[in-house]
Image (cartoon, rainbow, N blue to C red; front, side, top):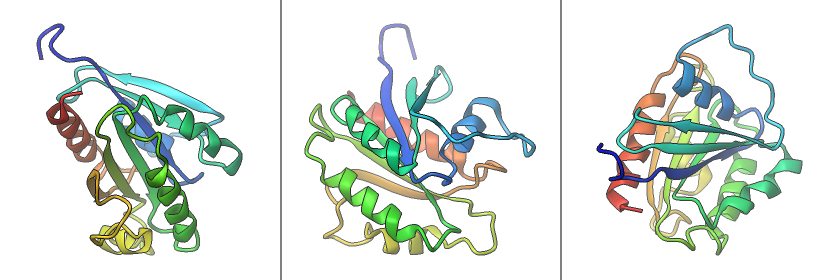
Length: 183
C-alpha cells in the first residue's frame, strides 16, 4: 500500500459486556497472552492498526454494558465497518445479543455515509459449551434471506480471543472487504 493511496477505515467493535471485545482487540495489537487481565471498557478505547492488514483500521472498542450501549450510535454515521462480538458459550445471553444486533442493523444512521461491512465474531469458541458459528447465526437471526443483515456485506466467524483462533483471519476478512468497497 503506497502512501496516500488509501485512507484508514473506521470500524466499531461492539457487543454485550463480557463477550470478549477488548480481549479480541488486545490479541490483534499485542498477540497471545493467556495471563492478560482485561478490565471492562468504560466508554470506549481506540486503536489504529497501521500496516497490519490490506487497509489501515481505526478500531473503536465500545463498552458493552447496558449504560454504554447508547454510545454505539454516536459512531454510526461515520463508520465503515462493524465488528459485533458475541459470547458463543453464553447461551443465556444470546437472545439479548440478537436484540442489540437487530437494533444496530435497523438504525437508519448506520451506513448513512455509504455501504457498511459487518463481521460477527462468535467468540469463546474454545469453551466446551460454545455453539458453532452456524448455530449462533440462527439464534442471532442472521442466517436467512429476511435477516437484518441481508443488505450488508456480512460474515460470521468462530473465534477465541484468548488463544487467537480465527481472530487475525477475521480482521483480514473485514479489512479486505473494506478495501474492496473503496470508501
